[in-house]
Amino acid sequence: MTEEKVNQVEEQLEANEAIDVTESDDSTEEEVVIAELDDNELSALEQMQAKIEALQAQLDEKEAIIKEKDEEVLRVVAEGMNLQKRLQRDLDNTRKFSNDKIIKAMIPVMDSFDKALEVIGDDNCEVTIDAMIEGTQNTQKIFSKVLEEHGIEIVNPVGEMFDPEIHEAMSMLPSPDHEKNTIINVFQKGYLLNGRVIRAAMVVVAQ
Image (cartoon, one colour):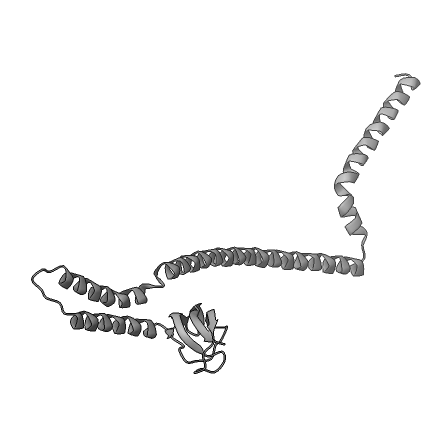
């Protein structure tokens, strides 16, 4: 083998060795760095690694808690929506049937009217004026009692002083027998519901 050929082979071998060293450097770099550490540095590295693992565990725990809280919030929102639907349904039923009691209480009044009409339509039944008056008065008493039991007050203010909050003056007339602003006549009674005016009494007031 000539000297020139020997030189080419040696160069090729050196090149192959350089490639092997480069590839092994990448795979063993971490091991080399660790091997070069002294005991103190190695202990510090282990402590840091342990701290990182502890922090990761805390992070995982916090993420689990957050996930649980998110699920809880979703449950609360769903329960709130269901509660809102139930309340709306109850409110609708309350509005629909709020007059149930007063309607039931007024049925006997209607029964009284029915009885009166039955008598009037019976040719064989002789109804006196006194009987009709008595029947009408009884019906009015029943109806007045129903209204009173449900917080409705009838306003019939003859002889009272005029109050613009609950009375409506239709006219004013001179009346020597009455003090000024005294109600001397009532065209139409008024009504209060638990103290609130439903309809003002329409009255005539003394000048």
